[in-house]
Image (tube, rainbow, N blue to C red):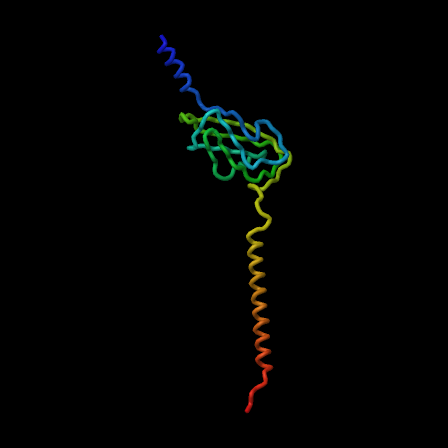
Length: 163
């Protein structure tokens, strides 16, 4: 009888699948600034094979960008520019560690849209650095021309040594 009870209880645990514990931004939340990523946290580790998270704008455009990252029970999906204010829908298809597909949905509202894709890192752009190099090269060439012109003037002013 005890072995039958153990068998029934162990089957119940094995049949359990991963479930969504939380979502960041939280399901149903409202925020002023758009997030740069959506993080889904499950009650147990999940697999990365076949994992997909779509974050759709109020007009239905998918704003998910970059590679999805799955570490243990956390699934992180970067998002790009959120140029629309309104409700964003999150739809996820993840595979649980035991191989069963899991679907998760949620939504959040952005009141002030418009962030660019990813965080702002620097104030200068590569084009600015290229222009800086051109200015340096032009200045060096001008200095060299002045030096050559001075050399020519000095050589021409020397008195000729006629015997």
